Image: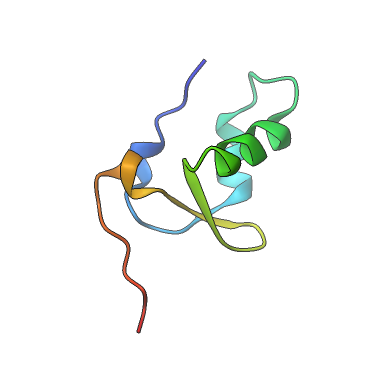
Length: 64
């Protein structure tokens, strides 16, 4: 089962939103951590993620 992370673009997403899409997994939080480890998600701060440019196709701004 795969979820469509591309739908979020480069907008920050709450972990609760992502885990709600992972309900089919036995351990949704573990899957979330694996997606971060694999580089599909980038943690901005605790509980807030952005989809990696390799998935979203959009560059991230450094906010400077």
